[in-house]
Length: 114
Image 1 (cartoon, rainbow, N blue to C red):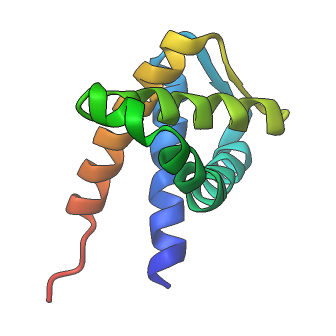
Image 2 (image 1 turned 180 degrees about the vertical axis):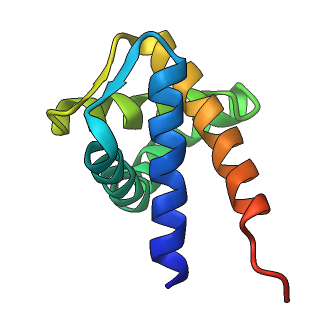
């Protein structure tokens, strides 16, 4: 149940950012849910491989290269999903940073009290 709630919150974040940022477009609520699911799968399968392969560069840049990896994941999702479009690399970096902040905020607001 928590996984479904997190995916729906991530879809909400994607939908909000698609309306706020000019270079990002998503086709409706269902498209945002598909983007959230695909991003979760890419972050689970592809991102760890990229992090391991680029570990020396990440260490030299003190972790800032992880922003580039996140942008590449966003651009890969753009290529895989027809109803999702990101205009460029810098837009993908901005979308990635804002998505992380918005996901953190939404999950802290809707977090269950123990």
